[in-house]
Image (cartoon, rainbow, N blue to C red; front, top):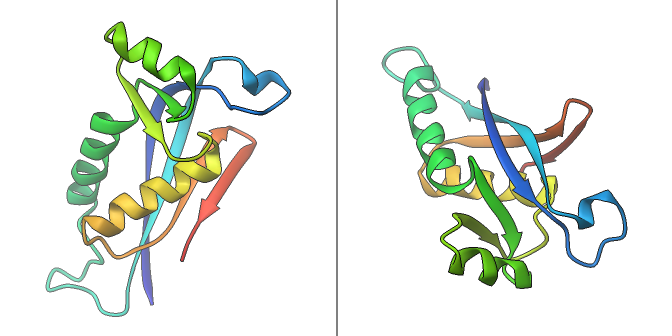
Amino acid sequence: MHKIKKTFHMAYAHRLLNYKGKCENLHGHNGIVEITLKAAKLNHEKMVMDFTELGKTIKSWLDENMDHKVILCKADPLAKVLRSRGQSCFLTADNPTAETFAKIIFLAAAAMKLPVDEVAFWETPTSMALYRK
């Protein structure tokens, strides 16, 4: 099995509902996304996928959906207020945790027909969530 990994950086703000601690307050992070693709056989160029093409595909999706956005659970009352004021928000079905982000990005890559093996989402330099099927 061949695997490749590419890393992306993004900035975002979020807060967690029904949570007691620092993350119950709106705050920001500089997150890192690591996406790993796999293939049993290499393509005609002898690659799993061209890094440039992977970069364009995932970076475009991240820029459009998550980078420099306020990411909130759709049940968060702050979402309606921010959106009514023109704030760009990305809404999640569940609390916007690192675990949720890793799964969302994995599913987005899979929907783009990428041979995604796993997605790691680093919320801080020491805290990471990993999603794989």
